[in-house]
Image 1 (cartoon, rainbow, N blue to C red):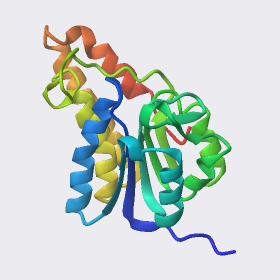
Image 2: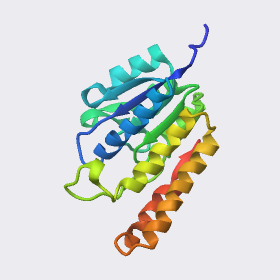
Image 3: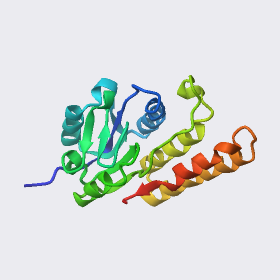
Image 4: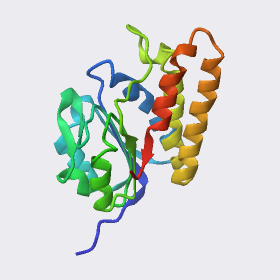
Length: 210
C-alpha cells in the first residue's frame, strides 16, 4: 500500500479559546495564519468547536499537511482541544503525524507524546516538557497584554521561520534568540525584571525531537 503524499503547501492549526491559558496561543495563531497565506500556503484552521478529535483525524488523513500546530492543554501523553476534549493521544492518533512537522504549544507533551510520535515516523516534534506558564496580565485581552508579548513573538517566529524555508534548527535558533532579546530587555527594566526568569524557563524547555 502506497503511503499518503505529504502536501508541502498545506498547514493545519488546531486552537481553542475556552479559558485564559489557551486564549493566548489562540490569538497568536492569527499571525501565523496571516503569514502562511501571504506565502501561498493553504491553512486548515480548526478553532474552538471545530478543534475536536474527529475533525482533526479527518483533516490529517485527507489533507496530509506538512506542518501541524496544536494549541491547547496537554499532559505527558495527550493534547486537548475545545472544552478539554482529548484530540491526540500517545499510541492512538499519533501515527497520523508521520512525515509531518509538529509544533505543540501545550504543557508536558514533549515528555511522552513526542517520543511516541517520533517512533511512528513524525518528521519533527517541537513541544515543552514543563507546565507552560506564559506571563500574562489578569483581565487583559491578549492583543493588549505586554506581559505576553515576548512569548507571542518568540513562539510564533518558529513556525513562521519554517514556512519561509528555514530548517528546524535555524527556526529554533531564531526563536531562542528572540527569547534572549526579550530576556535582556526585561532584565534591564524594573517593571519586568522579576519575570525574566519565567522567559528563561520557557526558552530552556522548548524541546525538538525529545
